[in-house]
Length: 354
Image 1: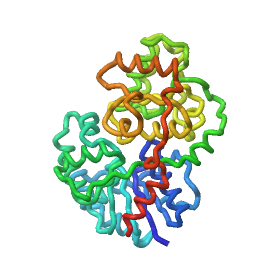
Image 2: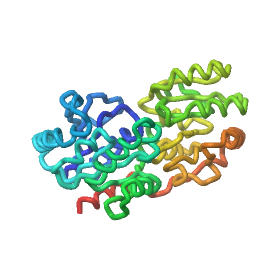
Image 3: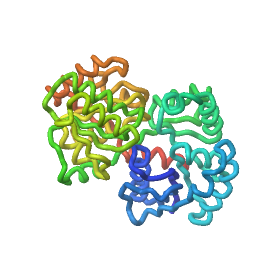
């Protein structure tokens, strides 16, 4: 049986982490043996007992400067993998903490999965050290083949690396429709029906403040629900109070199973400054929930029509679109295309082993 290894720092419940578990589950159903390696035992997402989860603890290497960490630690990670798993037929590295180490791995068939629009992510998260971060990404992503989760992410990476060849390709983060539909049948006690819904980590990129201001401007009676946690959560709560919206804005925190909330929403909103793909849009579409989104780099424009999009630099356009979506949500439903279904994506990953 062929072995597939997925590596990621932790499984705390964001988009990339959910994708890792979804792919592991589907590889298992396709008669492969999946393994997951994390650097922290921080697991918030449900994972099958028969998918081995191994911890290569970062407490042994976090003190090493990042610019030399990969070269020093990669041999130890390789040894850990060979001892615990043997020789994997495919290694999929997810996000920078993993990429930084696996860039120097001697294992064969190692691929980086690029989940975000790299240049925009760096500009947003590291405004004071853009040049240094860009240089590190170029060095790392030049060492192994890269799989981008959207065509926009691919185009951005090609520009960053100044390299357009078969080492950079697109395989979308496909979703497991059967699992999502089945999971949506739960009825949690705090379920709020017929709401405007946002799901995502409270950080600079997700821009919950943008949604809150648009919601205040359209002055509707439909409740607004936020699912997620993060460093910007308290700031958004304070803005809610200043806008006198506390009576109809609900913060439900992190949810292991967000799908009943998606299914019950009148409209699902993504309002980010940047994405890699926009997994929550796909999940909502799968459940038949209408969606609107910022036309941010990258992903949303590949998932929905222009009719469902607003430009990130126009608050008025967002307000108008949100108002129309609340009044006539049915016209904002979208169809899930085959390239976003997990079986389609898994077939592409399997071909990497041929």
